[in-house]
Image (cartoon, rainbow, N blue to C red; front, side, top):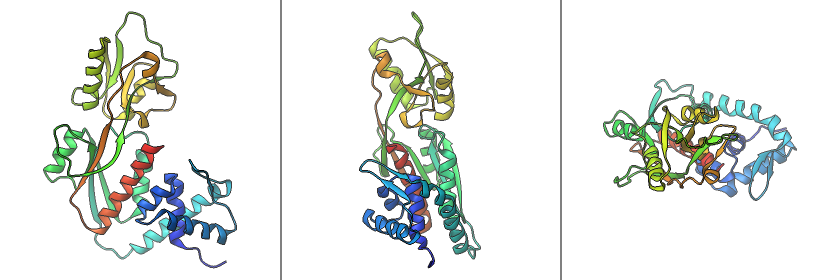
Length: 284
């Protein structure tokens, strides 16, 4: 068998990670048809069907799942070889809003490292306002935040984040008691919108848990202690959107915007990989 096409193997790994030919093409700065052709040629060369394709979903076949770890190792080894003579390690500092980061953070960090092993990624997770302040002060190379009110966006809108009232599947309200909330505190714009909506609807509430980050706030919901006000995408396993069942008011969606003035190829490619990963999570 002749040597595998590394570009095709990389495309396969991205499709497996992002579960989308379109997202993989964006990450590779290519077209969906070109990426699809590469993978079909790879499948022909291997004599194996790696992906199961339907109009709505792309998933690994049994043989694709077997091949994925080896493919990921091959791509990683290639990237390390290509960058092995780069003496100066490039540093990229990115701030990300804690409202949009959930349990998928380890997978995101792994994906960024696989993309460019010699690019040192530093991440700062904080509230959107804090992240934007740090970006404007020059201590961050890039910022991914919820769009701030009264701010004209000069960044790139990545996707629209939807928020919900998240609770344990078995949770039931207690008669005569206010709705217990788990939030990220008064500085959180989503918390502000949520309590305003409750007040307008005449629904009594009380904050019983305040934490930083969707994973922490969601943990209180998973434990049955409170209703978390978080992005629907970041809801922990075992929880559901209880809004319809409890007749709670709908929560506004917000755009997630990427800010960066960097123009060098490595940085832009890394940011495109990060943005594409978040897009795929929001579409899941």
